[in-house]
Length: 604
Figure 1 (cartoon, rainbow, N blue to C red):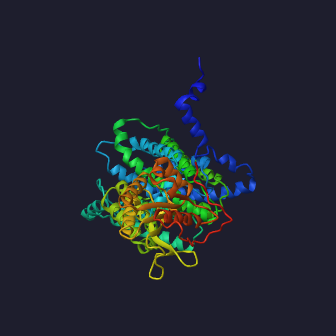
Figure 2 (cartoon, one colour):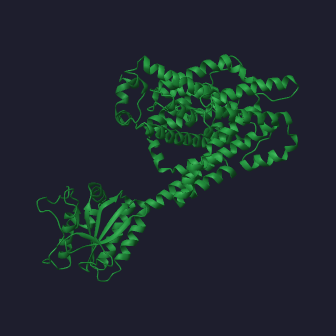
Figure 3 (cartoon, helix red, strand yellow):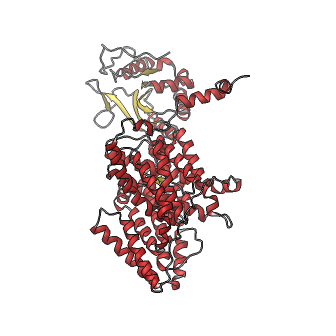
């Protein structure tokens, strides 16, 4: 009987497995390599950074859970589990994974789109695990590298719009009453104003006091964990107000022993309902994590593997889903604190997670003394901090396409579900990118009296009116093919022109559509007894011509490879070929080149 390995290593499965092993884009347990020279000094530096982050992560996680419409412990559990698991696989020593503002408000949007009767808490584990699986699959497919084609303006527009959604969803807590289910920013504003008569005076007063305390600490005691200290003071004030008869709403406590193992319940109706939201969450988390990781790495002159980071984030989400947590992403505020605190290795993230893990069952019950209005004010202040006026100004003032992407994503975030807003912004960003990339630069050249190529203009006219040298620079993929063909045809409108030399030295990414456009161009010229030649072709261009069969259509005598040492030699040889085709074999070609360096032959 054949062994399992022998069966697996043969046939299609064997080829797939071999390809996966040889082209694996991620490194399992990357932390092991980073700890080879680990010592006490590094451990103390990581412990210090991890402790600082934990002091911020605990109250922040409560706020993010509140944004998502979840009990506060779901944020704390994510802040405990996610950084520990992510640190095992991450390439960055600064990244802190856990709940974040952007993902929290996306979770709220997913919940708001669920039908009546579908429990948020029951399906949360499935949602988080789906996010993790999508991220891991994306890491193996190297999807994270594609984030470079998504404009930063998408994230700026989304985060700015999401910040207003967060604020709108917290205002009623500071006013002392509850709202029904709302779907968008404007729905929330309308419902808040409709119930304005229910305002509770003591709750509003406590909200104002919270605001003043936070900004006093922020201004006078910058080294203190400002959110934590603010909530401690407000808890003391809240207890005093409650003792005097004020009916304040408190944060729901974390019951001791409530931390449960929560494997996802596999229900197809839930899967279909959550699929779109999970994809949006995975994409947003990857985008946020990649941008944040690159920014921090660049500050230290380091590089990160974005696909490795995506894998680490996916693993963290799956672990979080199995232990009662909300979706995790890279946190800019906690990662920045980790960076400024001097983290040396990803062990800092593990220390932070361990501290939160210990704190959750031991002091978690104390959150019942925190007034909900005070926590809502902290959330609102945090949300305002997400609106970065400088980056908004850059995006609005730089180019029209950046402004269009930002404004479209921002407006969509206010009037539609946030998963739709992020996909709309990304779609528009890609469309505008393709539009720019599909505009190759075409310039007509001739050679001057010194034998140098010069662009045709009022000063330099064609040396030979029957021959045109067209220099093509840019992308020649499907989006540019029609424009490229039409521009060449426009040049060919000159009835004196008999030979067109396409100089493709700086042309890139030819595909089937551009090949077909060139085939049509060759046939168009031949119908009027004219000729097309190609010069300066790179090996990639040659490969496309050869594999597609276009080289045979063009004719091998009409194709001239580029030479690294002699940039003009292929064009010089193309000019000699053009002279033969129009019957000027004995005309002198005065294009400068170095005779000592040979012409590259067309590969066989």
